[in-house]
Length: 320
Image (cartoon, rainbow, N blue to C red; front, side, top):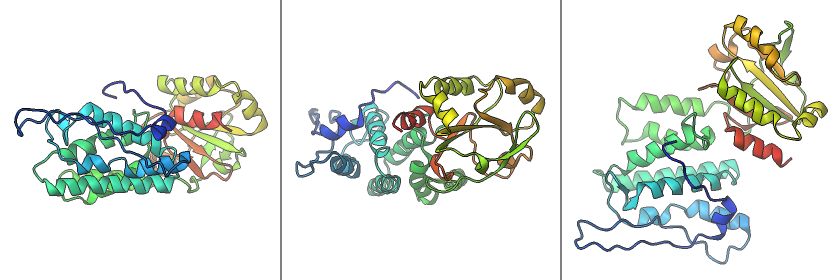
């Protein structure tokens, strides 16, 4: 992340949403003063929190695109870039509380509004600047906001957009194709994995209310952080014993000597193994863009979260 952002709780965002306008002072029309990001105002008729959240997420960007403003190296539509970035992070937090299909529709509408604004001012750089910001937040493997399901409607638009160069288009087509694999709600592909004793197992043989599918490498510092975070939850040992949660920890590469030497260090209560056929890596059963990668599956092995930040996965488990 380029900087640490102040992230407001979603409920607070839903309850506040008052307009916050900056002045348009400036002595000449050619140099207007920056304005504050125009926050959505939720009508009082919406009283329930879920109604207010949905209205706010649906109309979050309306005034931003309706009100004119200059776009340059410091401003996007007259709003300082850091405020646009903060607004985007708050918006993503709201989307995480919406049903997935609804959130995807809202992202698609956001994208269409940006494309329409660019079409109205083809000399502007707003399309590329906002798109790079969205890509960084929703697709970068190091982003704590990453969510390929939410990025899918955005990158699908970019893959077909008139504002994308032909040189860049193949990259966005590839991103759209990989984001479309194993989406939310679909069944995770089954596969065979082999444990340290040479026994074969199937993912679908693992019985648990929730399964954490964890792609890791031996000795990986970021992987160890996830192990510590998962096992640091006070309920986790009991959940693992009772079968409420299972962790399937898979090595997808071919340096088996290193993996075998390291495997005894993994928690004994986990299913730890490697992919003997390299089917995950080579057959693209899963898109593992970076190690570590964490999926959350339900009892029927339906995907609840795909390559999700650890904090989001554990926040979900904290509530069950």
